[in-house]
Length: 155
Image (cartoon, rainbow, N blue to C red; front, side, top):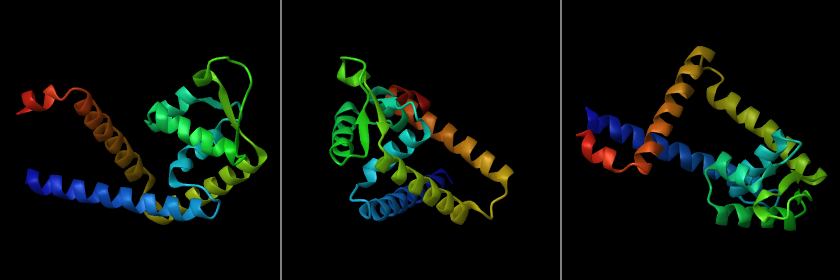
């Protein structure tokens, strides 16, 4: 039973990740961007005051190198800008430019349509339980990666 549950979970999560990655890649290609830019654009689109690289890192569970690379790419393309303020590079806030805000609005609309397509027929109460359960599993798996000795003592 546990093996079946593991296989079902593993295959399902893998298929979900691959599908999301493919959708993000196809959408972002039309803007000359990469799938790794989606979360940045969405996060910055929600916060007019901007976010620091540290906040972006925390929101997307990304390391500093990836944050730096994506920030550089989006800045070079004119979709985000660094707000003046801190002299420390990692403490500067980034905001969307007008062009970036346009893309973020498009993404928000596309994401809304995608969510409606994939979960529109699922009752709201079921979705709330699903997401609560998914977040619990996600947090527990992350904790397990941070404390691998827990796996040894778990059996």
